[in-house]
Length: 474
Image 1 (tube, rainbow, N blue to C red):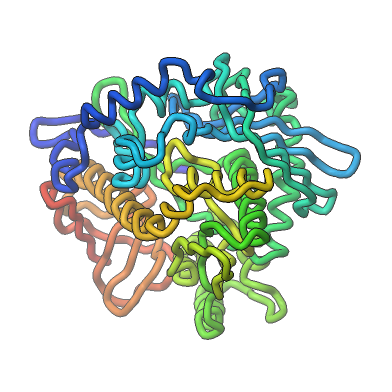
Image 2: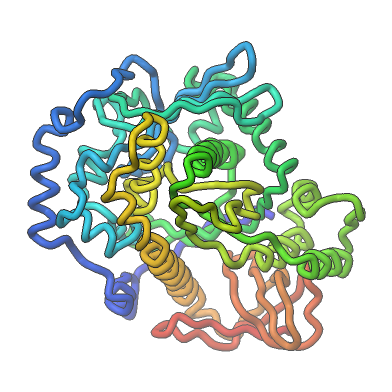
C-alpha cells in the first residue's frame, strides 16, 4: 500500500513546534559552563585522544538519514574465507567528556538527543555532536573500533574492541545505498551488506527475534515552509544496517556478561498466555499459524503491506512491553536477554545521541584490555537505568506529540469527510486505525471493528491546539 506524501502549508494559527517545546520544557541551549568545556575539548581532539591504533587507511563509510551531521557509526564490511568481518567504528565521546564535569552532568540530565521536525535537542553541544566527535567524511576522528567476525551460519564468531583513529571516506543515506545495490554497483565497503544482512536476519529468526514492520510515519519540511507527512518505506538497507548495530550490541553484551559487570538492555520473555492470545488474534484475522511455528518464524512470513499483517504487528507490540536497562556488578541478574532481540544485548553504537552507550563502551574497553573498569564508570552505572528510563519516556512523548500536531494540521479543514482506513487494533467500541491517505494513525469509535480489515471512517472533530483528532466508523 503505497501512499504519496501529503504536503501541508504553514498558516497563521500554527506551523511551528515552539509551543510543544515549551510544553515539554525542552532546553533551548546549553549553559555557558557546558559550552566552554565543549569548546576546550575540541581545540586539539587528536592530541587528547591519546595513544590508539591508526586505522585511517581503512575505507570506512557512513549510512544515515539525509542531512545528518551527528554521525555515530562508520562501517567497512569484508567477505572472508570463513564468513564475514565487520569493522564498525563508533564515535569516541569519552575522550571529549571529562567524568564529573559540566558536559557529563548535562548529558546525564538530558539522557539522549530528541528529534523534532524543526530541529533536534542534542545530547551534546553541536560543536561536538555535529563537529569534532562526529564521523564526518574526510576527517580523522577518535573512535572505538569494533572488529567482529561472523561465521558462514551468521553466528558471532569473535570480537576485538579498542581505541583507534579512523577516517570516513563517504557519507551515504539509506535510499542512495539501496539504489547502488539495486543497480549492481555498490561501494566496495558495503558490497557485502546484502549477503551479511540477510544472513543475520535469518539468524535473528532462529534465535527468536521479533521484527514488527509497522508503517513508520515521518515528518519533513518542504521548500515552501510547510510540512510533509508521509509513510517512509523501510528499505532493505535499513534492516541490514540495523543488523550491524544489533550484532555489535550483542557482542558487547557477551563481553560484559562474561566479565560480570555492565549494563544491558533487557526485556523479559512473553508469558505463554500472551503468545496464545496472539495466536487467537492471528486466527481471528484469517492468518494461518502452524502450531509448531514460533512467533518469530511466523512474523517473518507475513507480508507487511497487507492489512491483516499490520494488525498482527500492532497486537505483537503487547509482547514487547517492559524493556529496561539492567545494571550488574559481580552477580548476574535473573534476566540478561532482550526477548525482542532474542538474546543478550547492550547499547554501545550511538554515544553521540544516547547516554548509556558511553558507559557500556568503557566497560567493554576495560574488560577486553584486561584493566579494571574505571571507578567513575561503575559509579555512573547505578544511575543509568533511571536516567535512560526518564529520557526514553520523554522522547516517546515528544515524538508522538509532533506527529499528532502535524496530523491535526493536515486534517484541520477536513472535518466531516470520509476516509478509508485499516483497523490495527480493536477493543469494544474503540479502535486504533491507520488512514490510507493521508497517512494518519488515530483512534476511532463505533461498533464491530474487524482487526486487519478495511473500513470507512468519518472525521468528526479536530482540536489543533490540543493535537487531537476524532473519527467514527461509518
